[in-house]
Image 1 (cartoon, rainbow, N blue to C red):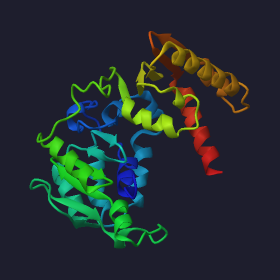
Image 2 (tube, rainbow, N blue to C red):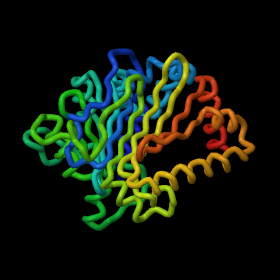
Image 3 (spheres, one colour):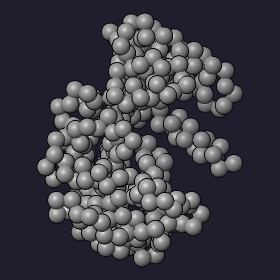
Image 4 (cartoon, one colour):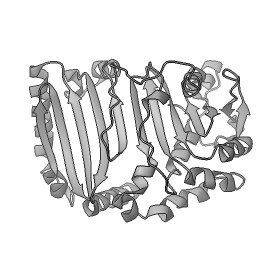
Length: 314
């Protein structure tokens, strides 16, 4: 998505508070979505991993980076976060910031650097105010590029929607209002989430077909029908799972061979903790499905994340 930096900022600031878990809800996603995902903020807050990474204190820090006038409005809203969802279809899509405080959301939009847009079935919409975009961001001056680069915003109840096109915003708001077909019951995209999961991503065959045509990766060129990724934690053990449905037995065998080859190459890494991470990974097949699963102790995941941050900051 282009210029939905405000969405990224909100997503980054979005962990805090405690309440009932809010898993992925297909009924909030437009039927034409080719990929969708969800971060269950409530489930994440309840994990040992969240506590190990600093909990509320660590995730409150970015609030200080917001403009002075937005900080007191954004803080209570973001601490009431239930989850973050996204969907993608072709070249467009949207991100949802799902909260428990519609009043705080309304107050934030009233003060945010946005301009009123064209309503969707009576629901107010907004565009990002160009004057509020940092000067170091490159701007396009022709109308078509400006239209594409704008961020489009709207809210339905206690859910903020951020999209990269007006059509994506309109589709999202109509589905949230129950006025358009949704992804529930779809056969083109897998929407079933395992219990205990706080991150869920599903990609259907239409989008995977587009990716395989343009990808230089041999693995992606094999033409998977679907890919589902999820991350969860149970009893202090973090589990990450990737499930890919292949089209033929030959494609499955090639995919397994490529993954095993990648594991062998990674095992030669001199990065600290690499062997421990690899030891927790298993690769298996079931029918035409390739399953890659990792199980790691919270302490090992914490060390890996901290090492990655240190490496990134250098």
